[in-house]
Amino acid sequence: MHAVLKKKVIQRRITKYEVIRRIMTIPSSDKSLDMKTPKSTYIMKKILSLFAIIGIILASNCSRIPVNNDPIIGYWERVEVKATSQTGKNIVLQEWTFNDAYLGRYNQILNHEQTIKTDFGWKEEDGVYTISYPGTDLSDQQVTLLSTDVGDQLVDGQGAVVAIRN
Image (cartoon, rainbow, N blue to C red; front, side, top):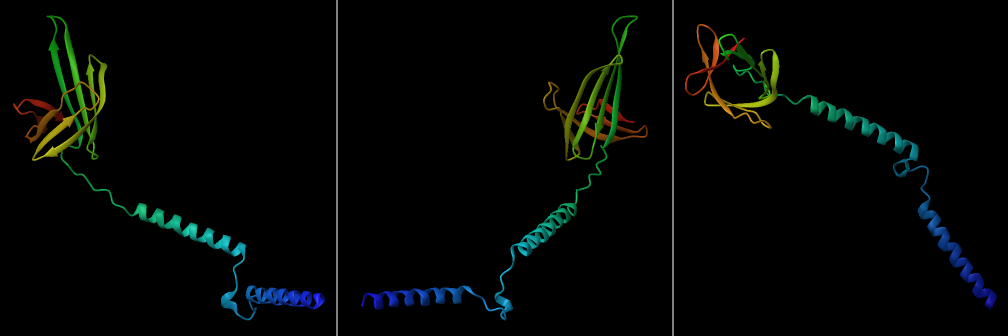
């Protein structure tokens, strides 16, 4: 009796393993259930990554930068001669270079020696330009653009010429 019981247990295990084997085995005639091999999965990931990189490059290159055609853009300067004594004089040259990114470069040269060289930011509001010099002791300037027969000028609130276009 013990042998018969053992034989039944073995048969149950065989049928159990047979059922599991049938579930795990995919018929070769059914192509829709065919599993992908690791190599083809790797190739598909590479192709998808390539398409993603191409998409990112195309999206970033298609963005447009707004064009700034403000009339203040360009090089402006001011030359000032100050008499220190009857025979001596100081020549002060100030240069502003405005660019289209609302930034610029300011230089001050005293007797052919550069004394100040800094960047500045600018903005325009109702025809009044505000020039700010962050990180320096220079105070903000407010100027307006004035076109004359002589040329373009930047003037302050009191009407004094701050710079001319060169």
